[in-house]
Amino acid sequence: MKINIIGGGLAGSEAALTLSKKKIHCNLYEIKPEGNTDIYKSKNFGELVCSNSLKSFELSNASGLLKNEGKLLDSNLLRIAEETKVPAGKALAVNREEFSKRITEEIKKSEYIKIYRKEITQIDLNSDDIWLIATGPLTSPKFESWLMKVFGNDLFFFDAVSPIILRDSIDTSKTFVADRYEKGTGDYLNCPMNENEYSIFYEQLVAAELAPIENFSDKALFERCQPVEEIAKRGLDALRFGPMKPVGLKDDSGNSFFAIVQLRKEDKEGNLYSPVGFQTRLKWKEQKKVFSLIPALNNAEFVRYGVMHRNTYLNAPEIMNKYMQSKKYKNVFFAGQISGLEGYVEAIVSGKISALNIERISTGKKLLSFPDDTMIGALINHITTNARIPLSPVYANYGLLSPVKGIKRKKERNIAKAERALKVFKKFLITEFY
Image 1 (tube, helix red, strand yellow):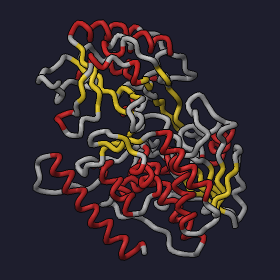
Image 2 (cartoon, rainbow, N blue to C red):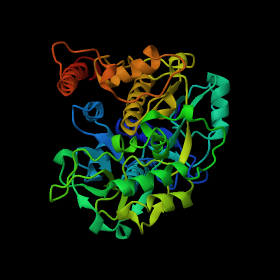
Image 3 (tube, one colour):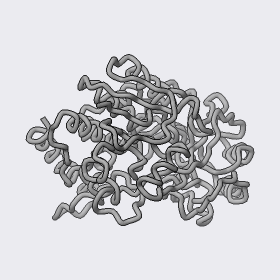
Image 4 (spheres, rainbow, N blue to C red):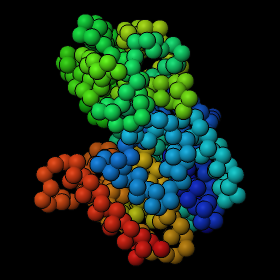
């Protein structure tokens, strides 16, 4: 019996390293570099396509709770993320190149992981082999076609990527360093705009030409990654209540501004920055023209332009059980965004869960089902049981956890849910896991 992992993204990499630590041999299949797309640029494993942020680490944020649970499970990629992090206030952001490089190095040096740089177009469901499908949102067309035949029609949404800007091309005399509400260590570069500058920028943005995308529908845009131009079309002030909100940001003299674009570091040295919330579908020449209207970015040099891409996922409630396993084919498991989970940490943790259950099925142990009052358990329960059909992508959020009584303030309620979840999680590890 062989264990085969299809996809060397976040979920597949976490799964491979998890099995390796348990001294279990596995084959890792990755289509890159021969199958690189316009989205993927690196031959390394665990490449981050969109933002370099793994979101907040605070317990008042559901992603913070998910990270804590992942760390309790000894997640390999969350450890690497901590080791390659860059300053980002209350968020965990990484140097994306160093992050994927480190993941690749650990996979390559493992004697238990055999790497195959090739495309998988179908799998033998009747063999004794165990398969983990972790092809992510950009599954190859041939394998996607096979998945549709076996598991029914797939689902999809459109996602967008922000551009990356060279630090030396930013006019820092027109910026100031600050974190929103002073929560951080001065990790963001802020580009203020007055009302007239904002109005000109807005008019040019909504009029800019979009890159063509086959079978595109704005109804299939993922809400949390709405392109900046789509947000702008909702009204003149939409951006000022979204990615360009000036609330909680003042310069050293205490001045407030009409609108602000925040730039987040892409590397520890601060040589590269990306504008927060500026995912876009604009043509590249339009990005240069429109984003250069931001005063601090008048002469900006773009080392990567933003792009939009189609994300594929499966209808998990119909095909998966609570073990991240196929209901029909018990030798097939799923992990990552192909399963309907959305987000970096969600992909990492799901890869961990699937690998743990693969290890158990291969050794004849009882499979793991995580408690619903934990964030991991709530996410898996949602995509496999509670979600409406067809499934919409889901990320960690406190709405998935049962209510706590007697607490009115949202932040305090969330922290109470987090504390309860961690208590349940730790008890589960002692009584069921070990």
